Image (cartoon, rainbow, N blue to C red):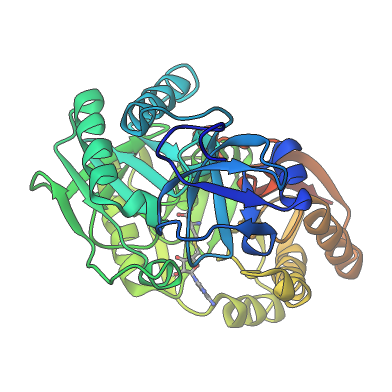
Length: 401
Ligand code: SAH
């Protein structure tokens, strides 16, 4: 059968009618429960995908352990996998040329949304930070192809791999440490919207910074004024962008190492800050907001950018309670005319859930909220419309009266 479909020599995985219709609807994943035949398919291989009758559906990367067994990489047969990978990198670079502005730090490859499922590449000035999330992308030949193409197109000083141990476990890949894949440089300075940031490729959370908020920083800075609070500030992304427009800025985070970098970032940007100091407070944001709101502290601008509260669908109710508590307290602390910038990076919390939560919080706080902007992730994190999982960040900017 595999003689008549797909690429010769490539194994075929058959999927159920439900799996097939998911792919025909434009999604790129098939769950293991919808795989009907994958006998002897090696972990992490390129496969032809066919429906239960043998009709071809495209080419995919196969995982033998993940619940997401199939990630489509092309709707066509793939004759030369290495050439396809190189072309995909070229396409990802070209996609960003007209849409990424005022920065030398952005996401260069966003997995499924750049048709390279399981691969994330972030650029921080002259350092590339790479994350491999699937068996297929971990193969040595794939790594070598990706690295040589990234070097050819971007000439980075170095390429660093950031390893998520939990992801490797789920993919049944042997543990490996984060580290340099190419070159020697592990730290640099990057800039976005005219603000500079220190970057240490082997420290910090995620691949180093929250690049998905880049355009939201600039948007928030437009409306920020007066006394501002940046809650869950990490290395100061929002605080540093808002500071030139505000009389006083305080950043709150529970991570001391993050706040140390935030403070170094403030020093780096002292010229724009005109001698203004940003105060960094190490605290649990829930406790601190409770204290501040009950002791009558008032602000003109509050940013809430917590970590993902809903890691799975099951967490949705608890997550919405957490978001509501934070937003309720922030709303109570904002002066009339105050600006709330409130974010959620949980995919499982839909934009409608998030706005509903915010409406409940406004009602309970007896405040009227008018929406100024309902935003998402920066354009270098593209959203594939038929793959809802690729849209995860919500950022609402609203004015309180
Ligand atoms: N706004 C940041 C990103 C925030 S990520 C930026 O734009 O760069 C979420 C942050 O919340 C992390 O820095 C993490 O250290 C912090 N955090 C997690 N739980 C917390 C808690 N309970 N109280 C305060 N900070 C917390």
